[in-house]
Image 1 (tube, rainbow, N blue to C red):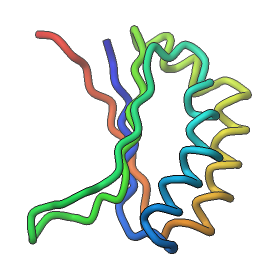
Image 2 (tube, helix red, strand yellow; image 1 turned 135 degrees about the vertical axis):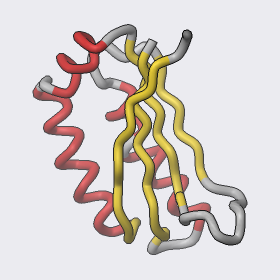
Image 3 (cartoon, one colour; image 1 turned 120 degrees about the vertical axis):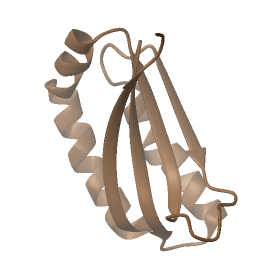
Length: 106
């Protein structure tokens, strides 16, 4: 299994409750609809080490293999999601977004 993590490093441009609510309402359903995924998790920051980067939110999307992940990232839904996410995040978030793919198992 592969997990594609999306780290949102930065600050919310609104209060934490409003940020979480708007992300859950406007973006989470789109992310959950990514083709081929086997699970979507969204977590919001609570605390961090004093010297750690400020990660506001982490999105984790599971895929069974690289072929399914690649197909999902090439899908029309991904481009719709990316464009809509950028518009929503522009009004809610200041920072950078980076992606990491990990595999589970040995």
